[in-house]
Picture 1 (tube, one colour):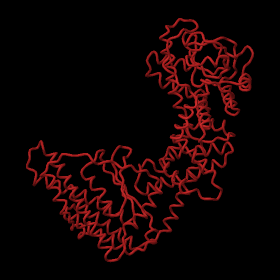
Picture 2 (cartoon, one colour; picture 1 turned 60 degrees about the horizontal axis):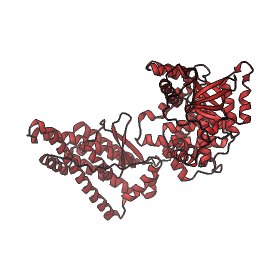
Picture 3 (spheres, helix red, strand yellow; picture 1 turned 90 degrees about the horizontal axis):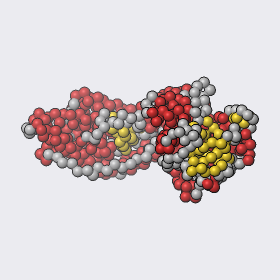
Picture 4 (cartoon, helix red, strand yellow; picture 1 turned 30 degrees about the vertical axis):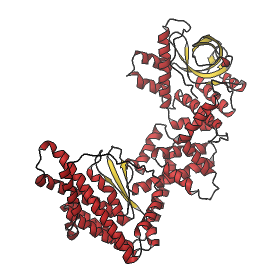
Length: 605
């Protein structure tokens, strides 16, 4: 694990030709560039190497010691990958240097040059020459070197250490990343790559062998290098507890512990659904391949099951109108192909993705075949769709809109009351996403919750990839279709009534017209909301009186069960901000909204 370094203070190095302050600044720039370069290394490659080293370890994800070992393995694997060339290309550090050199200043180019000459060393920490400099022995050549590092504790002097060193202009060196203490076995492993009189034969292969040995055989621990106080262990454990990677890994361990043939507990499935996102899916696909390669069939199967739940959840969200279009299975398949071509994902990830996609599609077809195929439902949907088409085409006033809303309510209630509870629960919930094309809220948005309430739906707001606001209505098919229709109806009503207000009622100065128009629209939204709420109360009371049945809680129960399968997390957004309005315009809008009686849309259909 990389030690945290403070800004370096000036120090003298062998040769002493460079000013001390320049050496200190250069060492700091090298550190910064190196950390940036490691952060850009392929996560899949790092994870594959770390898991290979730890494949035979019995790790407890909740134990601080296991957390430390995981962090250390990933740190060492990251630096190893940074300096290891690809099969048909340059090492990541070489690509990083080329990319950064064009925009670097003189000091930056010097730091990048030093990184380009960095190599793996086996050294012995001999003595401290100054507070910032140590004398160390290169175990491959026998030469004494100067190491610029003020963080190494005196208790570590005499120890053998493996690390990457970058040269400074005055002949000294700066260490990159972890300093790994070596016991006798690890040192002997590294010295097998040293040839008498010729130095180290292959530094990168030596690093891989040493790190593998240290990780597999619980290497030497020295306080201040890779042994840390209890408070830091607790801090790392807390960080790991919050980290998304550890959540996925911990979930896989729990899935793997489930007996073969048994269904995972509902709580585990909920956790997998909450993690459903493209980035987590790609991680699960990668870990499936890595686990299988290293003989962990139980973990591989666990990651496969989690991947299927994620894909099924993403498919459900898409059917509900939630999420961005670029998260479709087709776009994810293309992204997987790009990642494989760039060595960021193993090739096995695409094969598993295709297999799971076929299973998801088969599951979707089976659910569709199982559906009730209700002819009456089809007629209700067709009637609502015809209403929407006519309304959007012809436009309507607020009076005409409310008449259409009443007609739709009658259709919904008549159909809903004709269903038994079992038939209602057999219907699969659907959703529709309504894109506003706006990044800021508008007065019409205040109608959205009332539309959902009126149509017995759930609704939520999302922000798309472009930053635009979109709303999702979710519920039984006829209710969702009705909510979509009512939204379109109110959009047309806003346009019609706002135009009428501007042409007939607004006689104020042009400088205040914008405020007046917005005030009218706020009032219109409140008026429409008031009328829809009162209609809803009347409908529900009439239904209970005439049939003794209350559809609302029954529908709500069905929707909540289906909503859980989407694995979404909702956050309430406060709407308590006060707004200044022009009173006359506001009351004119509210009065118009309360008249909301649409007829032409119904009669034309």
